[in-house]
Image (tube, rainbow, N blue to C red; front, side, top):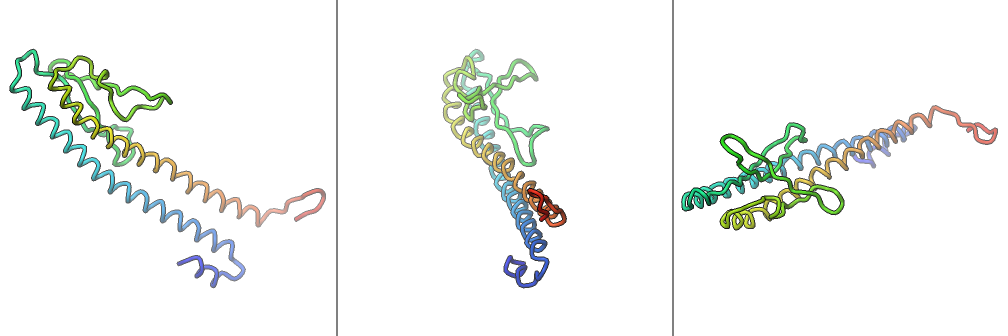
Amino acid sequence: MGWSDCQETSGDSEPDCRDAWLLQQIAGLDTEVEQRCALILEVLREKALDLQTDYTEAMLRERRTCQPSERGRIGLRVRTATTSAPGMFQIEWYRVQGKQRTKYLRRGKDKHGRPRMQYSLASFGRLTRWEEALILHYEPQCARLRALLHHIGQLRRDFHPLTTEARALVALGELDQDTTVEIEGDCI
């Protein structure tokens, strides 16, 4: 039902029809945003997992050719946090600290206090030459994926108040129709 259909059939209930149409459109938009975000996140996760696999294979190839002291200890992982929104994931670098122990590396913060999208080389600490070369190759790609993830999360967070505000507007309109207001001694 379009807005023009609502106008033709509304008669005296035009505000009710208009409100229902508005809520229906916003709900449809909310559904569309969530569905599109889910599809995009699925593809981004596949790309992140491909990067993880490529890095791991390259790292293992290099490790086989190195002396034990030059084997390196940096890894890349794609994981879902328990507090993440549906479909969201993280792309993180870690340092192996012994058998079955890892420490996730920090990206640091930008000048506004928000987490950076890209790790600096200083975040990795001591590196072998081949690890540094691999990180310089893979980290810019990971950073682009992190930026896309950030923007999708921001889109979701910014969109939800639209639905809330529309419902509040409709509820406010319903109160206005049933309420008389006194302004300077006159009732409206």
